Length: 232
Image 1 (tube, rainbow, N blue to C red):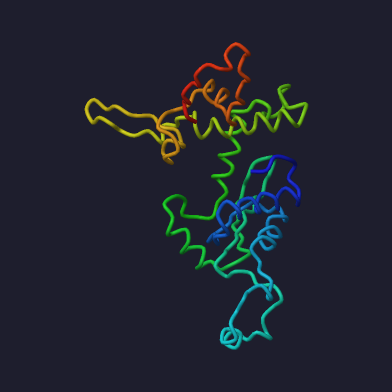
Image 2 (image 1 turned 120 degrees about the vertical axis):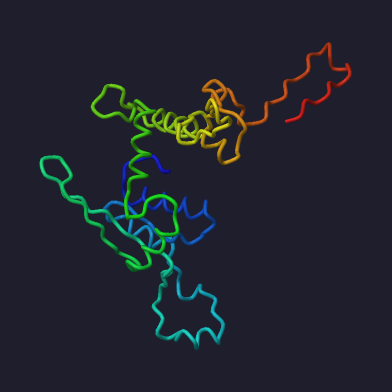
């Protein structure tokens, strides 16, 4: 996630961050709206220069080194967009457009998943809606909008952390008793195995991010026995 206006620079930052977090693995499918910067960012992020491909002489002969383009884009990646047509502020038609890859390739990728079976942007739209629900600074046409960027950034990341560690949506609950039905409500971080309990807002705000700075001993305690470390 990158906080800021949607520009070419912020889009490229987002894809670069995603590339680093996933160790450069090739995603099978990207889906976005029709903002033109997305296609450029995908190509810039995942393209490989011809000179950096490190092919052997046998491979160069096999692939036709002289005929290869100066920049190679992985054929494993497909990219599609959602085109929406509106009338009087309402969406009346949705069209799926493929920009990279083939329809067969995208259909196979969607069939392998366990969620949506069609090209869509509903997940990122739902994420944006949840962010607006958690963060009053992002609500539309209200006086709670952020006046300073530094506070907007801080509250945005606080909401992201709470979303993962403190929120317990019904869809993630786990049944622990059949009759009468009993459930354990879990946060996304609990499902991911990052924690074993739901964090309160107080816990999030008081959790130490850095090791505490040791306080200097007072003069009358300099020669006393050293306390055992509590660890951490």
